Length: 129
Image (cartoon, rainbow, N blue to C red):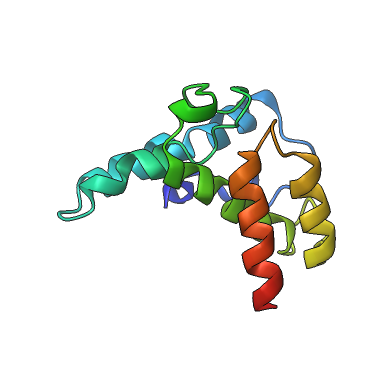
């Protein structure tokens, strides 16, 4: 949702983002949460949307939350969003196979992803494909 405020040039860039473009991209969780907050009935998911780019080790954005400070559903969305990004064709990245994405998620357990949620995600998606 918040990516609606990002310039097309930034969204489709096949090059490394400039500092300005990266700052623009990093605003999308805040912009998305602001949009969701205005929709009656969706107030309960604002923090899930806001924190879906937080990393388990605290190196994410926008708030730099760590571990259990990140809403559990936001931790699920972080893995799901990352899997979707990895398995989708993007101008700046070749699409990964599900197995390659699972390997990357496994490699990033404990840093980017909640280890328990990452493992459950891999198990569930593996069974579904």
